Length: 122
Image 1 (tube, rainbow, N blue to C red):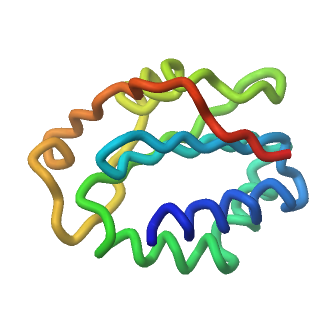
Image 2 (cartoon, helix red, strand yellow):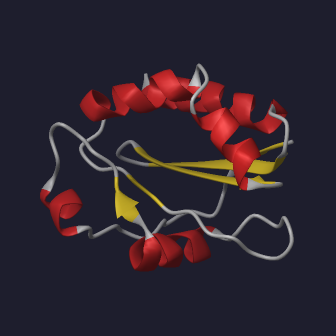
Image 3 (cartoon, helix red, strand yellow):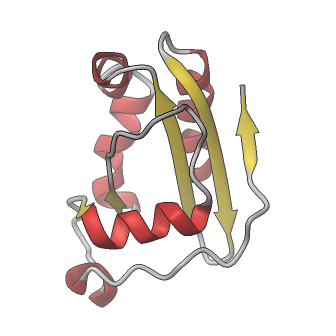
C-alpha cells in the first residue's frame, strides 16, 4: 500500500510547480527511497501539504517502523546519487515520527541503499 501511495505522491511532485526532478528507489523488504529537487523552498513547501502527499505522510505513522528525511540546498538541479542521499541523511537528516519504531530507527542507523536502479519521473 505504501509503495502505491508513494508512487502517486511522486507523480504529483513531478508535475508540481517548481519541481526540477523526482526519483524513487524500491528495495527488498519494503525499503523505499525518494529524492526530489525544487526550484525553491516555497515550491517544495507548497507540494508537501497538499493531497496525496500530505495525506500519505500522515499515514506514515502507522505504515512505517523507520522513516527519515533530509533537506539541503545545492547548486544546480541534478538529483543526488543514492549514496550521496544516504550520506547526507545520516549526517544532516532527522527521523520522522513513527508509532512503532524499530531499534534502527531509534538509534538513527540507516542502511545504505543496495541498488541504484531507480525510477525517474519528469
